[in-house]
Image (tube, rainbow, N blue to C red):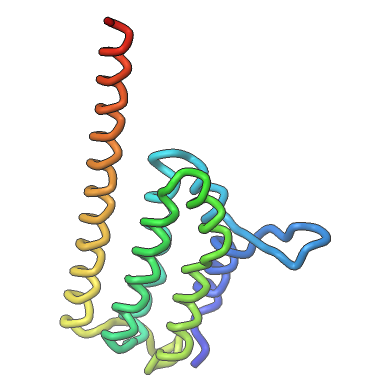
Length: 159
């Protein structure tokens, strides 16, 4: 089923905007903004939520919504790792995967996609809450590790 062109455009912007000359390799704003420590991956995940929420309007089955949420979770978790995560962000392309899933599993046309069922909204709300909890947990672990490093360095300087 054909989805709204703005969703396809968003997937392209986030995952395929820039072509590396001489190579058949592309990356987008997800990989670029993801370079900003502590902010980039969270910001791009928030943009990616728009595609997930749009899937409810297209009445995508819950199992597909879950798969889309899993794509975002993998993108966020691995993308948060320094250096390795930045390369992964350019390769994984979760936004385009989710737009493709949405296109394949949409049960209504773009013109009919106005509202989803209450259970679908609650289900996506739960997925987003879980992803937000994942982000909060990752931030807490990062802050704890940062605190551990600072305390070890300060103890080493005192000795």
